[in-house]
Image (cartoon, rainbow, N blue to C red):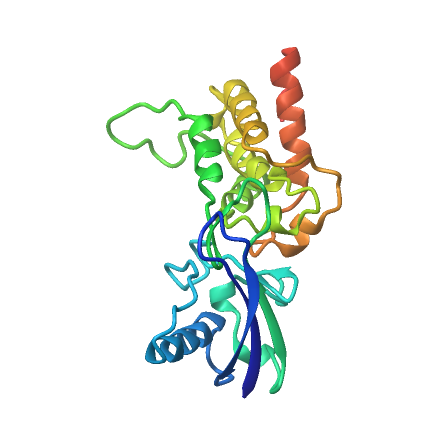
Length: 250
C-alpha cells in the first residue's frame, strides 16, 4: 500500500516546526512504528535526517510510543497504543497526519518526541507507601473485597502515556493523576499516606502547567487502557477529604 505521510518536523524546542510530506510503501501487516522504521531507513539511505519518535517495548505496555495520528492520540483504534496499531486499519492511497502530543507541560524535544517528565515529577510528589520490611505477608492476611481490588487494578493499568492530556482541549492531566491516586487510595496499604499523597500530587500537577478538567471525557475515549473518569471523581473526593479533614472512607 502506498501512503502519503505528513509528519511534524521540529529540529529543537526553539525551532518553529512544520509538516513535511513523505511517500512510503507499507505492508498491511506492519505496525505503525514498523512503517515509520521503513520511512526512516529510506531517509537514512538518502542521507536525510530520520524522523525522531519515542518507542520502547512495542508491546502496548510502556506508553512511550505517543503521537497524534490524524488528530487522535495513538490513532483511530480505541484502547490501542501506537505500537499496536497496524497498517491494515488504513487504506491504499491514504494521507496520514502525524504530530507530537500538544501541551504546554509536554514541550517538544524533536520531531514527534515530547518531554513527559512532568508525569515523573507528579509521581515523585506522591511519595511512598508505608510497608513493613521482611517476609511478605500471607495473601489472606489483609482481606480486600473483590470489587474494590478490581477497581484498584483497573486504575493501576494506567501506563502514563499522556494520551489523556493530548486529547483534552484544556491539556488536563486529571485522568492520569486520578488513576495514580485511586489505585492506592482504594487499598488499605495506601491509606496511611493518602491525605498527603493526593494534596502533593494535585499541587505538582498544577505547578507543571496542566489545564483544568471540564468533563469533556475525551481523555477516557482516547486512553489506550480505558481508564474510567470515575477515578477523577474519586480523586476529587480524596482531595476534599484531605483539605477539610473528613474521616469518611472511599
